[in-house]
Length: 289
Image 1 (cartoon, rainbow, N blue to C red):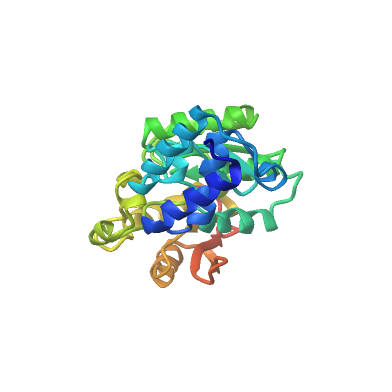
Image 2: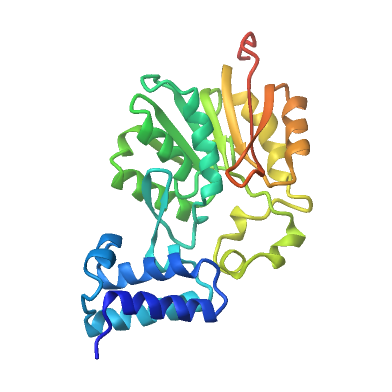
């Protein structure tokens, strides 16, 4: 007898719970929706709609992969972030709600009509940069990443969102190769997990996300040591920056940016009340050399 939508959701939730998957209710719903070609509204308004045998088989495959701790974003190939939907592959970090703190902070003081230039260092899927450009139609952005595979994902996302005309993507090692270009805003979510902690991460992260985008050296601060002076170098006078950090890195990262000459250095907390984003600006009187 064929499963209907509500039965499929219930069975999926129970299987994920039994496997010890965190957030089984949401994961089960997302997998059922994708397998059955349904929406959340369908599950509520038409709960007894039967799945086809092909849809049931697809759902079973999805559940088996999730139980093996493959992220839902990789199973479905997409992930919502801020107000946009992004294509996601194992070549990029899965966008996380914590990172939305960067976007939220930036947009507070970013006038809608401002023709700002935005630089995203370590652009990955394009989550931060494309979320900003989608909200600020006069802005243009450059995303830099050392991974060509990640840039391919960002390129596809920019095209899907109709932002390719305002988005440039460059393969590079942080700011190397930017020359004397300068920007109104620089954002980054660099690798910041200490090397010895990688093995302790959840399997979804440890086994499925690119290590290059996770590992920040012995103390997790290697990227910031490079980025702090370089971000200040490529910012325009009075330009701003916002970089994501680990929950316990506030003092160290703030100090690196202050030592590099940043003004108004502060840390923003995320919705979980953890230190998440270090912000600041460049001396408004400093002339570019």
